[in-house]
Length: 258
Ligand SMILES: NC(=O)c1ccc[n+]([C@@H]2O[C@H](COP(=O)([O-])OP(=O)(O)OC[C@H]3O[C@@H](n4cnc5c(N)ncnc54)[C@H](OP(=O)(O)O)[C@@H]3O)[C@@H](O)[C@H]2O)c1
Image (cartoon, rainbow, N blue to C red; front, side, top):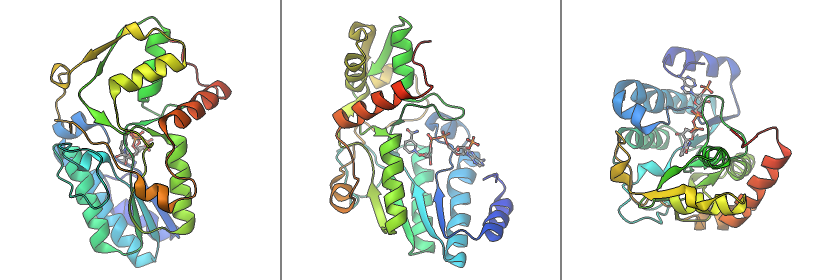
């Protein structure tokens, strides 16, 4: 289905009548969303409103993949009870989508991952960790921000948590990142060390030198205490997540050489 065509979204859900909807579709590039606000609102917010309404009508349980970018990043270590306050249009569309789900249905879970990485790229997008490894392995020097803190999320861990939330129909908002708060620079250093790559090729820079279009939250790290309490296969420490990432990368077809 095309999320820009709200009627097609309605039609597909009505035809399939799913018991469970895992809704991860979005424009997730913050700069693109800032430059294309109405398109971002259509796909991220309005399509989610339709999906939430249809979920209630069809009695489906919906799991919505939201984002740490709903927070303003002023304090960090956000819990599910903290009040969101997005600083860019992407975050705003994700927050409005969350609100639409909460007001349309009671049969929902909202998961919040952040900076998703893993041993395979998405169809059209290179993920952050593979981008770092490919550049370092190819002898390139890279710039990583030192003053933006977040909680990276191994996609395998996220998939496992979403699977458990779906199977057990756990309700409400739940933070589903790795159990860590770290800057992109420190994350890059950890990866480089793990793969015996040259850490000196990583240059620490500040956010204001990046030329980004959308503002970013300074510290959008998430507290994963709830997920650790509620889930059997909850958030992993960064050490565990990176170990699994490395093992899967070696086993997979993916290559880090450029
Ligand atoms: N990446 C991150 O670091 C991050 C962090 C926090 C939250 N999230 C959230 O996680 C989810 C996945 O994000 P991602 O970064 O993995 O992005 P992604 O790889 O770009 O995946 C987004 C998905 O949305 C689909 N999509 C986009 N526009 C669509 C449209 N008009 N109609 C139908 N499908 C459409 C894409 O389909 P195609 O594959 O067919 O293009 C793709 O499957 C999103 O909800 C995002 O907000 C991501």
